[in-house]
Amino acid sequence: METEENGSDDSAPLAGRVLNAADVRQLTVYAQLVRLREQAVTPPNLMLLYLFVGAAEQCVADSVIAWNGSKFWLMPVLVKAQDFVGDAIRFPLVEVADELAVELS
Image 1: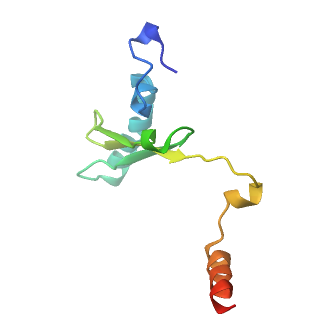
Image 2: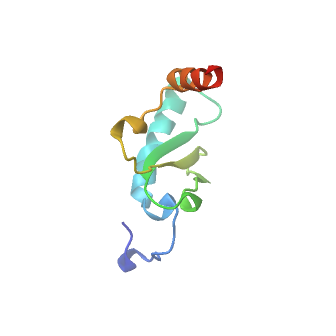
């Protein structure tokens, strides 16, 4: 987490304020290695998914162009508390069947 030592403010909701330059550099090196191996003209885009607990309006994606030209995305995945653990994983076909059963009854 960021502190006063590294010059950030605590009000910033974006993950870009949590990762430091060394973290991003390490992740983008992998993109550069893929680019060189594949002999690609353009570097691959990167996306780092991370769990986000908080208000939905603060769950905002952030992106930047990295040193090697890769577009680097920080993508939050909103985590919501569930009353029943089974509700955490949705089964679309079951939900559709349940809705259909309600409509038919």
